[in-house]
Length: 180
Image (cartoon, rainbow, N blue to C red; front, top):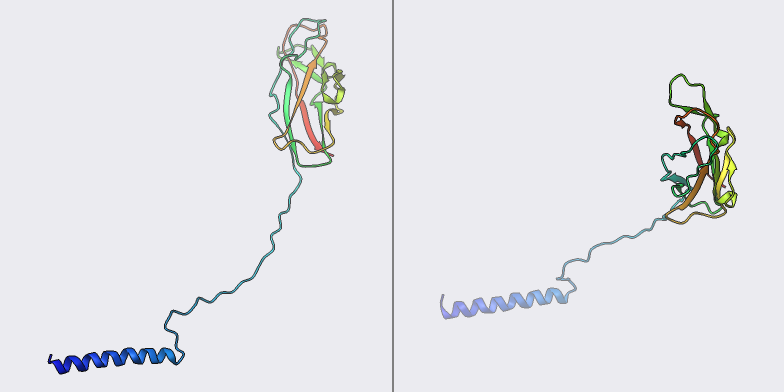
């Protein structure tokens, strides 16, 4: 390329730059267009329902003694945990599932009345109360919600063993936690 051709090319390049500047001067934007946006809102609702659970109930306990004695659960009480967000509180009741505790020896007619069982707990103020089949007995009550991780309920049992043959007499106690 000759010197005059190079000068002409340089002049054209400057003219092009000048033209681009002139276009910008005419109002054209040389930067990318801004992103379009749109906005709206929504309402969040959190509906909290009431709940109550009875968990960690001692699965079984044994009262051991001879006829005429009164063994207790003493150092091994029946425990459970009640959890509720009901601010009115709750009751816990217990009721024997059947009228009698039945022996394990086949053919025996001996039994122990379930009503012979006695329970203490917060609702009895430390005193024992007889269970009465089929009427539930309140063994714990609270006039407010439980602690967030639940309330520990402790019940001790005792029985005056009647004059029956040696055997293991078994029955079921049903616990129910109810909101107030």
